[in-house]
Amino acid sequence: MEEVKLFGTWPSPYSYRVIWALKLKGIPYEYIEEDLSNKSPLLLQYNPVHKKIPVLVHGGKPICESLVILEYIEETWPENPLLPTDPYDKAIARFWAKFADDKGSIMWTMFRTTGEEHEKAIKDILEILRTIEEHALAEKKFFCGEKIGITDFAFVGIAYWLEVVEEILGLKLLEAESFPRLHAWIKTFKEEPIIRENLPDQEKMFARLKRRREMLLASS
Amino acid sequence: MANEVVLLDALASMFGMRARVALAEKGIEYEYREEDLMNKGELLLKMNPVHKKIPVLIHNGKPVCESLIIVQYIDEVWKDKAPLLPSDPYQRAQARFWADYVDKKVYDAGRRIWTTKGGEELEAAKKDFIESLKVLEGVLGNEPYFGGKTFGFVDIAFVTFSTWFLAYETCGNFSIEVECPKLIEWVKRCMEKESVSKSLPDPHKICDFVATWRKKHGVGVGRLSAYMSTVTLDRFECVCFWGLLSF
Image (cartoon, rainbow over all chains, first blue to last red):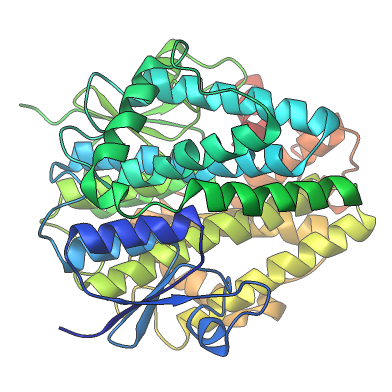
């Protein structure tokens, strides 16, 4: 099998999506940690358009953008599928993965801001959680049924990272009473072995993000 | 079971056009329904409760939303004719990457060009827009299509923006042909395909709509006045267009 490399950053949820996919499919890979304040020449060579992580390099050929990478992994190594086979179910899975991608940045807006912008971001996040609770998660174990998949990976970036952000900001948005399905799903994905063994340490995340929040507040 | 296909759409939407082109490429018969985006119908709200946007493809009663997801769905269901994505996973990844690039870079800069009053904001939007087009022109290279020898996914994702080129050029006072001649050659080549020419409205109509919007919002019509209808626009067309700002 040709060599697989992953350029990522701790603790980027986008990096982790790719790690989970590779591990679930049992694909050996070399991980390269990138310092985003000092991007390596290799990263800039492999992703000249966006200059971002994650980048998957397979047999020397780069693939960029996490959802594009996930689809590539799925098509190249079809064992332990991460997407449904039925075209309609696949379209729904892709819809929600894109939703998670499009909306996920609002959490970081909430993290970075104060005042009115911050309050608006909180309202937006509650709306997003409500949409996921009512429309995305039916009475299923995971977003696409009984098995974990790409859509779950996309939402973990919101749910797991939100727990840390909530603690730093002194908020509680994802309450069990208001979002029972989401809560059940979070519990389920944390128990999934590949995820449980490959989640960034929340204490470390808390320490790093708390420092960043303090710096942001000091400079504003 | 009969294949019932309905497309909820709006004439000037470059995203809706993608679905039209894909359906035409596959020779699929469908019912086209123009949505009044200022007064969204029950069916649209029921079929896309999350975003409430067009296009929505309804196949045997089940909705598919988001234009690039719709195009992939069409390609996977009607897989026996005119493949829109390559078969090789790496080529497919490249196609998805560049279609995503069009959504991220071209749409945003283009929209800033036609909604902005002018000055620095307009110049910044033009710079970003032209830059993104030059990147895409580089990707096209010397091939006839983004799909290589055959028309494909990235061609569909991007060619629908060509109906808006005249509006961008007029608002921004620049020429895309001067900046990216190979892209304009590629547009002409795509327009020779019936699936494209029959799915895209006349660019003058887009200019007409943009002029009407700008007049209503006090942004200034300027050179666009050359494209304004001497006949009052049909109210139905007006409201469809103004509602497009929500996409």
